[in-house]
Amino acid sequence: MLSGRRYRLELTAEQVVQCQEFSDVCRSVWNTGLEQRREYRRRGGWMNYVPQCAELADAKREHQWLKAAPSHVLQQTLKDLDRACREHGTFKVRWRSEARWAPSFRFPDAKQISVERLGRKWGRVKLPKLGWVRFRWSRPLGGEIRSATVSRKSGQWFLSFLVDDEAVTPEQHSMPNTSVGIDWGVKTAAVTSDGDFYDREFITAGEAVRFRRLQQRLARSKRGSANRFKTIDAMNTILGRVTDRRGDFCAQTASRIVAKNALVVLEDLRVKNMSASASGTITKPGRQVAQKRGLNRAILDKGWHRLELAVTNAARYTGSRVVKVNPAYTSQRCSACGSVAERNRESQAVFRCKAAGCGHAEHADVNAAKNIRHAGGQLVSACGDLGTGRSAKQEPASRATGRTPSWGNPRPSGRGGSQSRC
Image 1: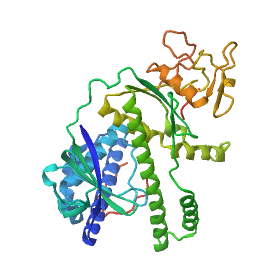
Image 2: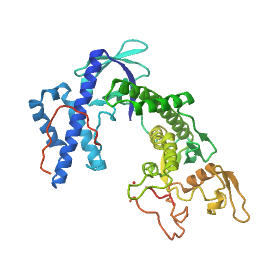
Image 3: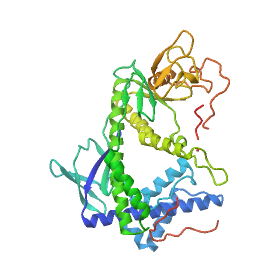
């Protein structure tokens, strides 16, 4: 089974310059290749990895700066671009901007990667054109190396190994008859049908105040100035800590959930659509923009998508099955009697069934999580039916120019839907 191992690098001054140069070349290759693909599509033609790789070899003879990075690193960049275009569409793939893109590049050939352990805390790896690089040995490799990726985050350079740990997904979970439903929320990140609440603050009060001041300083700074770059680096340092805490929270929460449950049922949410801006256009301005902006921040801060990925990844090691269901009406349905009414949910945390003879009262998120578990992989219709054998009046909507790019010098490039939940 393939798994990732990340380590902090200790680069020399010369190696820092080399890594930055490699990433700049890869960024230029990505942007040029994407521009070429879009130009071909506009003309009704098609361009893929093989001809682009051949053109890259010809371009390296003409432009010496392309030879600064290893050949297989640039080829891997074109492979990543080809995969992104096939999965998302040529015109939906983003440009890699110098200001917004986190520098990274990958060494795909494991035969050119050598790792040695120097002591209890340190190790070193030999990478093409970089030579021997020291890294903090924070955990064992635990498998055979398949590739290595160098990336920069919050001013630090990291090395991520893709390893084959030889683990095999169990045919059956150790507790095969267990199941759980998970309700995502903005008040609490995840609430299970067992009554467990998983949440934490990812940024401290002091960091929030400092980040706000840095944002104000950034707004007053001059573009391209040294102070502006210092401010951006300080902001990235705080955001890096927040990201690390969120990742740690997601990994620990996912591990606890899949260890106890053979079936994990999640809400099938479109986070990108749910967090879209409500600003509208010039001719048709949006409504309640400030309120929607606050909701978007709360949704993105909880990291629903990252937690979903963590659960899916952890389930490989326990044999748990992850199922996603339509979340329609799960917050309005009574988990005891099954009646659906908007007034059942009295507030964010209080659910009280208004059906005659029921009166079931429970925490609203726990009640929704039980409904999600009850769906158990069956789609919830837009009318609120949890089963497929009952009639439904309405079903949920199905998810539904002549210039040839030139291989110029690396330069900054700034170029870079709504889900109905019933």
